[in-house]
Length: 203
Image (cartoon, one colour):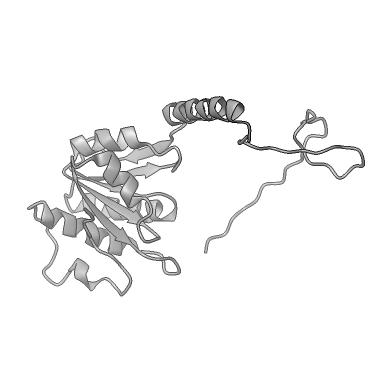
C-alpha cells in the first residue's frame, strides 16, 4: 500500500560463532533449542526460570508512544497503520476543540498495561482502533479495569479506515460522555460502511 525504501547493508563477516546455529556441514551435530524437559526434576525449575524471565520482560521491555495526552479527556489506543490514521483524526478533532490524544503501543507483548491503567484514570473514555475484530480490545479492557469507558472501532483488513471514519467514532464517544463534538447534524458515525464496528462496548 505504501512505498518502502530498503537500505543496502552488509552482513559482517566476523560474527561470533553460535553453538545453537543450524549448519549443513557434515559432522556439525544436532542443534536442538527447546524450553521443555521430560524430566520433572528439571522441568519445574526451568518453568520457574521462564516465569521470572517473562516478569522481567514485562517490567523492562514494554514500549509505547503517546501524542497530545497531557490535557486529553479521551484517548484513542491504536497500533500499526491504524495509529497513523488515528493521529490524523486526532489532529482534526483537536481543531474542533475535542480534547483527545493517542496512545500507541509499540510492543503488544509485553503489553504496556501499567501505562494503559494510568491513562484510564486520567481520561473519561478510551477508543480502541484496530484493523481486526478487536484482538487488542480485551488487553485494553483488562488494563483499564473499569476506570474508563472502553469502546471499539475496527475494520477487518483490505480497506483501511480513514481519518474521517475514526473521527466519527471519536465524536460518537464524545456524545456518549455527554459532550458536544460541534459537528453538523448531517455528520453521523452511523454512516460507517458494512463491517465497521463503531463504539461497541464489550463487557
